[in-house]
Length: 353
Image (cartoon, rainbow, N blue to C red; front, side, top):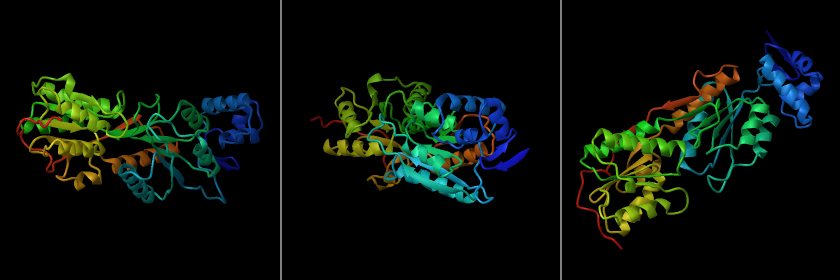
C-alpha cells in the first residue's frame, strides 16, 4: 500500500500509524521523518523506535506531485585525481538513471580530523534522497545522525572499517597486493619492500597482506624491515625509502601502495643517483593520471574508482527504493598496468649519503 502526503511517500504503514504507535501527533512524526531539529530527544527516540518497529521506509518527498530525484556526493576534496575519478563515475551513473547529483567537499586537514556535521543538515533541507560518501571515515555521531534521519547512504572506498550494517564499495586490495608482488617476483626480484599508508586501515592492511601472501607462495623470505608505513605528512614515504636504501641489504624493488607516494620514491632515488628501473623497480597503486606523467611511466595496480562510484550509486538507488543489498561490502577487481618502471634486478642499490 502506497500513500502520498505532506510527510512524503511511505511504504507499508502510514505516518498516522507511526504517530499513533509512538503516542505523538502526525506533524511531530513528520518532523522526525523529515529531519527537523525542533523535536525533544525523548520524543524523537519514541518516533524513531516506532519507525523501525513498523518497518517505515523513508522515501523521496513529493513536490508538486513529483518526487525529487536528488542524491548527494560528499568527498574529502575536489582537488585530487581520485576525487575526480569518483565524480566522473557517479555523474555518469546518475545520468543513466535520471538522478540529479549534488557534490560537496567536507575538507579536513588530515585523516585524523573528521568533517563537521553542517553539511549533513543541508541534506534534509534540500530533500536529498540518499548520499554517497568518499571520505576517510565518519564519526559515530554522524553515523547515528544518518540512521536517525533514515537517510540511505553508501561509503566509497572507506579508509577505516565502517560500523556493522553500513554499505560500502571498495577494491579487491588483497588481490592487488598479490598482483603487484607477483609481477616483481616474476621479473626475478626477491628483495622486495613495501611502503603503505597508515597502520590499521582497510586498504593498507589488505595490500600488505597480499604482498606477504605472494612472497610466501613463492618461497621468498619475508623481511620485517622491508615493510614500512608512511602515514601522513610531507616526504613520509621518501623518508622510509632513504632508510630502506641504507640497510645492509637494500631492496631491489619497492611496492608503493599509492601513486602519490611513488613520486616521493622517484625523487629519493634521483637524489641518491639511482635510476628507475635500472637500479630499483617501482610499482604503484591506483593508476591515477600522475602515474603516466612520471618518467619513466609508473607500473601500477589500477583501482577502479569510477566504477566503484557507479556501483555505489546503483546500490544507493536500490536502497532508496527500500531494498537492502545482500552483502554490505562490494569489492571490484583490480589489475596490473605494466609500464616502464619495472625490470629485472640491476646492480645492488647504493649511493648512501
